[in-house]
Image (spheres, rainbow, N blue to C red):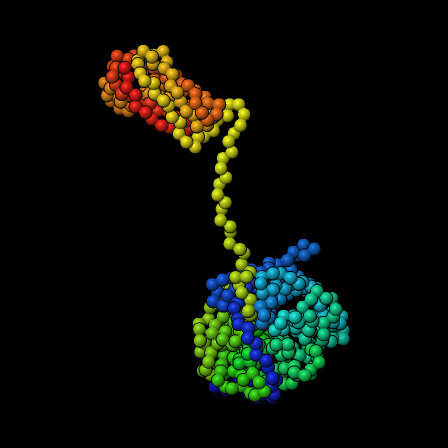
Length: 452
């Protein structure tokens, strides 16, 4: 295929990072999200923020440092960029620093961030800008660099270098069709850059470049606009040696995308690539050959149908997930009621001692039974005989009853007395066996008595 990168102007000594990618941060519907690279876990980090004017400020860009620190920016969509702010989440899930995403100068129409990234250690962020004013018309483009603190000091301005990303602590940006890399010996975020790659042979404009932390792969976002609308968006993957030599040619291809492809991000070890196209935000395995389109080592996984601003990093999704709900506490034992007239549900069954002789005559008058109550409350005695004992059919028939109220657990005396049926059937009851049921609350015991 025709080489995507035609000319290597010069290279920097690029220091590899040992960080291992674990997640992809992204923006969806103005919210900040974090997901595992296979899409099996995801968590929302932030919703749009309601400001003091009652307007929702939406999140518009997010970046992960190689150590897992996440930084996201937000703004009221109807306001100028100079009112932007940022928020930091640490790799352990804690939300920490927030501050202004500010600018230099006093242009009437400042637009940023155009490209957004943080250094490998998460201490500095860079973002592109386009500042313009009218009458006479003036325009300047470039990159801002500022510490990830809540400082309100103006950022460092690097003129001309557009759509920045970072490789370690060095800025990678472009002027025209040339990708430039900040010199290794440049002053802190100074303007000393060296041309690295010429992308004019692609026939498209360069938008942004991402470089894997180990220097083994670069992703070039290439685009074309017509009448203010992006009509073409391609992502080229090119293998490099990560030192001061040209591309190896081992990988040189376009990512197979559906429609316009944007927002490329490479994992630190160059084994995963993320981008957004008509299907949404995707993550796939990077290619290992120069076949074009790229032969991906694992199929693309759609992480979010409306996701954008992908940034692969080392944050662990599990650190941001809410803790699992605690198991329900065991029910507390019931509190015994107190005071006169109160009852309680016994936890054991009451018992009764049957007198030596249980005669029909005694039951007619009422025969006292010694009962052992298990708690305060009402205790009942019920005597029944089988229906056939009285020449009937059906369930047992009640012939005698009695009740008493215990003031507390312990002994009390209750009289068992024949009811109307028992008195009427007294002759038939002679010699019959009756079942005596002693009940308190839902607990009961039974005994067999012989009627004389």
